[in-house]
Length: 270
Image (cartoon, rainbow, N blue to C red; front, side, top):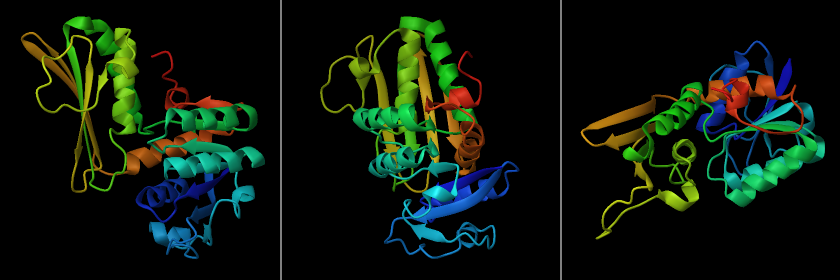
């Protein structure tokens, strides 16, 4: 039985993760925490998440509870995730990180900490369907090749802080991989004004923000006379939380280092 510590326990994702942990046969909710200023601090994590009283009170910060669990599940904010990884490294506690918006430098810090001190699953999207989508996009891009233009459109709720989404960027990376390109060189994240014709190699990623959209991603492969569209639409947060608890049940048995959901789902060679 893996003992789980949930970060951001008072937030929307934190609540759904607690719900999934509560119903997972191999996991136990050991602790939960929030920012010290959160109104959820001191509340029962189960009551906040809607599963009923658990006796696990939401604590003000990770340091006070890190020794109570085997794995930390973190879907908070990129700067906070780096600090949590530093704490996890000191205590050699496994992590599952679904936070998006990590800079390359922050991702490298987490990788270095994990390789020396703890196993970590880090992915921009934990949903099983989305990770299958990642692989489908890579395969499709490789088959269709340079004759098809690749465009990605993502939509999320109005409160999301980063853009493009981490999932959209990963989709761009997978398409670029299938085409033998580098997204850093060919990615186009916005278009405005007289920009001229589209180049043959660019991969466009465009962003929509509004309302309570949980998450929608469509990859367009546009060729002469036809268009192929591959889409994923999330209608609630449970698919992300479900993937996170799968990762939490898996990661504690692994060696130190950073893994992805491809490893968890055995999709690495798909």
